[in-house]
Amino acid sequence: MKAAYYEGQEHIRVGDCYPVSPAPGQVQIQVSHCGICGTDVHVFHGKMDHRVQFPQVLGHEMSGTVTAIGEGVSGFAPGDRVTVMPLDPCGACPACKAGHSHVCLKLKFIGIDAPGALQALWTVPAHTLHRLPANVSLEHGALVEPIAVACHDVRLGEVTAGEFVVVQGGGPIGSLVALVARDAGARVVVSEVNPFRIKLARDLGLDVVDPRDTDLVEFVNAQTGGAGADAVFEVSGSAAGAEMMTKLPRVRGRIVVVAIFAEPTKVDLFRCFWRELRIIGTRVYEHEDFDKAISLIASGSLPFDKLITDVYSLDQLEHGFRQLEKGGDVMKILVRCSGN
Image (cartoon, rainbow, N blue to C red; front, side):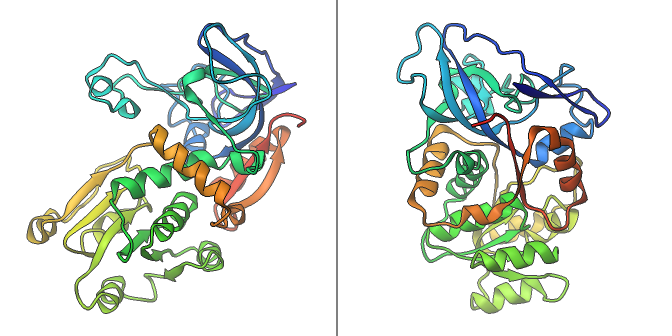
């Protein structure tokens, strides 16, 4: 059995897995698949070294099978197929007491602040588990976490049937936001400049505009009779995206900020005043978003499998990081973490 250890300075070492027996309230999982996400790439580049204890096992987009349970755990048993919502809140801070434990002021994100899923056997708190239905493959089960992000974003964006929605950025999360918003009954347009992502979005049945070729504001106004979009999801994380997002919504429209902006960027707040726009921040997910993501996969109604570019072995993890950092013709990479 193997695990992948991040040792800093863009170095991954694949070595022996050291299983941790589950303590009370914990479960041990044999990890099947784990996705690599943009946050993992940021960690790989050293941008979160202040939060990581070396050597650290990364990874949080996963699926697997329960192998052992600790004292006091109920509702799960060895053999259950599961995924994990990788949040470990304190339960005592003002955010937790207000019912918002996903934005706990002392939140531990498992896979960054604690060992993650890129290992054969992984021990986590039982409260993080979500059961996978029999018709959801373990490969697709590793997509639940990023789909839950999109479900959270669309839910907080209050998207309803018949609305006109713009998604700025057609990467993995942007594509998922677009698919979930379309499933809610909205007409969705994706703004993207990467040719590979443009083609993939169109293969997913989404309308796509390249803002280098088409004036996005004019396009949205033409499609909405001059009103503007009901909701705009900013997923590009670019300065241009932040500047554009206030130009697109209708009067009292919504802007949902999904991307992580490491530095302050220019935002037209006058436009927010002038049109009474709402800006909504979104961070990770809640249990109901995991439930929604699992139900969407189980329904088979959305082509999530088209987002999987490659499936690598654990020994190929560093190559997967290099593929993602180069961008281009890649979307979602999964890693097989055990033999099953």
